Length: 391
Image 1 (cartoon, rainbow, N blue to C red):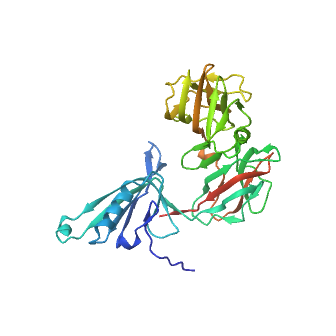
Image 2: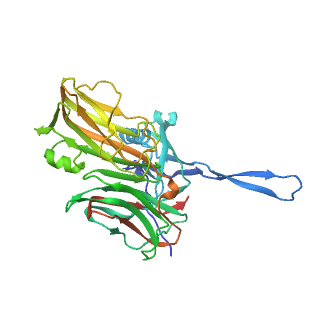
Image 3: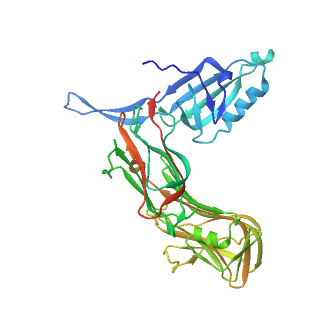
């Protein structure tokens, strides 16, 4: 069987296919380095892998009088963020950008008002990814959720590349012991490729897992457009006092709002792994401060040492929590103070070993299973799996 493709080149979601020179895509790098070790007295050598080099792509545009098209090309390449998708050849194979830059070339061309540019794009991996498959994004997903029967059609063992989920509160129950696993064929018995994600989700939180980042990002954000009683249910009723008027929360005289983030995955050691963002509309008296607790009942609640809050956006980083499981973070009004908030976001980043993320071998048929021990549904769910092809 012969698969024919239509040439396609896109960088950070921008289709430049019509602008790229027909022979203007040049891959390089990605070679497997080896260390050769000779030992006296042996008539053979040891060879040890040193890993693969980065993969680079040189993309050359056609000569054109369209200055705006060239400037857009330069802008999109030079501002492409890390891990943006890059399609060098066709619409079904993409790489993830580690770095990218582009520049104008050929001063002779400019004398004729012809513009030409070159982009140099570096990817960490020597492979390209196939199209997303797995469990497509959907709202109100009943648990347990199981994908269709899938096949790793690529040339390399591949893990789940991305997952996002949001908790819900249905029939007086939160989702507990959320996990994801891969099972061969249609079997349900195997748990050797399983990752336990979270002991207990909130309602309307966002829980993200990414193979590349080696981090899970768990966050909860509210603009106080819900009733205060509904927000309290979102965060397991970890509130005291408080009232909402006109989508602004006011906490007075030791009122508090705490957001519990459950393990078992450990808090990451990365800078700013635990943070609270506060949009402060007003402060009075002694104002308010940020607090954290490690116990689920908040019995060990501790004030964070930080600069005084000010009207406007405040981002407070809570240090020295690396390796912790449950962490609750939030804001508490002073005994003689108050604070008015129009937005609040708490974020906890957790470490996950890439080796622990469920995977499938080349040619293997499998299913992805997202499961729980309590609760009935997620507010939304998506699980992406991408085959890997050597290029």
